Length: 155
Ligand SMILES: Nc1ncnc2c1ncn2[C@@H]1O[C@H](COP(=O)(O)OP(=O)(O)OP(=O)(O)O)[C@@H](O)[C@H]1O
Ligand SMILES: [Mg+2]
Image (cartoon, rainbow, N blue to C red):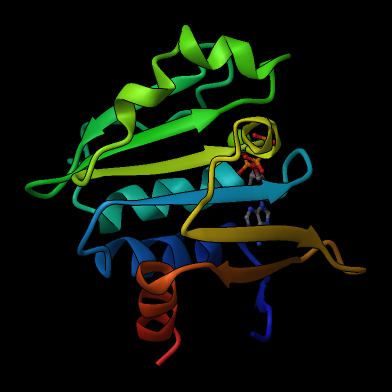
């Protein structure tokens, strides 16, 4: 699939919001890309689209590792940032296994460490800087739920 070019934070927010609105089942989304590439910005829009009330300010769970937000019924949004996790053993302390549920939407920044436990994401989104410092955002799906969501997003 062709990458999306985002020139502003607002465009990335809008893209996240559009995807959040299309969620109709539990799913996991990996957000890959360097520092400041726009992962948390995307999650802010995504949370809005998913119906997380405006009074919840979405901040990166850099130190808490995991933030939980109520979303449109019956969903709960879990936003993880595993940048500071040094080994997959520590996943146990944040209760990673317990957040896997049909009604949970799990978005993970710095997800690479989850490879160690062979965790499979429904969707992977890659954020890259282009030569003009705009963002190039690419989407990949594995499995039917992810494929369905991306095909509706890019219809
Ligand atoms: N096209 C764009 N898309 C997203 N963010 C942009 C864009 N242009 C500029 N920005 C700015 O870049 C910054 C992106 O920060 P953000 O916290 O979303 O990155 P991140 O990928 O989550 O980084 P980290 O790995 O440190 O968590 C924000 O300050 C945002 O306003
Ligand atoms: Mg972030």
